[in-house]
Length: 99
Image (cartoon, rainbow, N blue to C red):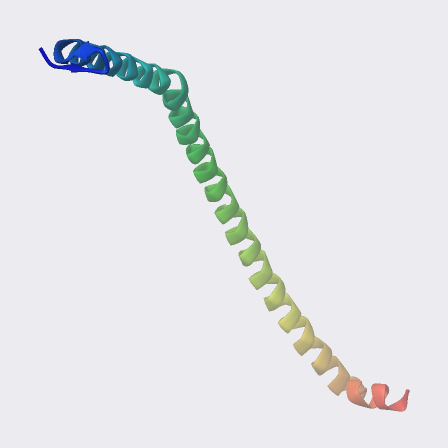
């Protein structure tokens, strides 16, 4: 019989099989205890981030609408002021040049 480090081939095969079973069990336990909860937490976090992104996109769209409305009002006020200045004979540029 062949011996390697004082053990026969059968004993080496038995030891390697036992070691493989232990490593497999350890890997399965690690997956169940650490990785599965981590994956669930990551999935939950991803969903929450997606929901927050939708909320922020809606808020941004609302703000953009308000900005357009304010721009329109500003343009309207500018036109009205220009007309008023033309009616009263006041020129905005002349007033700044006098200072």
